[in-house]
Image (tube, rainbow, N blue to C red):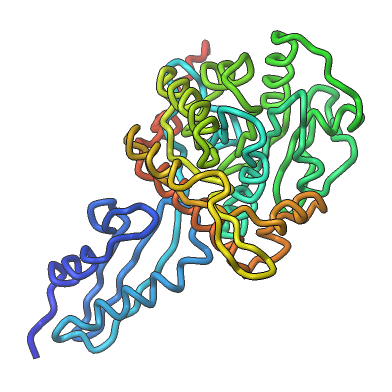
Length: 363
């Protein structure tokens, strides 16, 4: 029996293309260690995105691949993940307690952006990340209803607010501070100031990701967030119809102009499956999100069906990922959330936190 080399193990692991990153585990530096003792091999993998529900599947696949090497009798593959802070726009400082901010945007209303943001946040939490949601839609806050949470946030020091927690998600929304039926008759500067206060005056606690549910469009709030808030990456939600794609392109170009990386496009309401007969129909057109991603060279993160259950579940304050965690729709959201954070994991890291601060004292 020939001796097994580290190079052989690395070469075999390199053959596996991760479905979320779209790259192999060696070039992405996820392969951290290989230990060989005779015909026994131990491999350590550390992913840069939350993968609690994917860990066992990946471990089993890699174990089978390594054990197919001539001379390997048994392999053990340890899969873990470590979420790091990623770089943000130049001249914008990171916020204490938040590693990464992901903006979920759309060019127009009614495309299911808030529902997508909520389920994405829940999916990341289910995979082991510490997650928060900032409802940045001052005029039409929907996160309190969608997350089934109500009440006023506490202030322990009279200066800052404690986020409300639902399904392990730290949440802040103007909807917690005003009555649900009270219209916000505010001009642009007041809205942007409110957004900055909700973000900066909330005691976010050790978040891996803060998902920001933006209002639709490319107005004051979106520009404030894109220019003054340390955003690690943005996600664009659209439907396949031409009018939605037209507006989605505007959102994409806005983020490009302010140098916020667009992590990908999510196509919502892509197909309707009749609950009675099972007939499939592309009510809003077909393949628009995929074509847009190809035209603008950004990733296509996934497509969601037009399904009555998605709407009913968020209306009842129990979104799909928690209402039916093993269902097909929850799995789609989890795949989208993993792809989004896997794409972010491939971006440059924020190294500022690694440098020591120099303090000069007069003794």
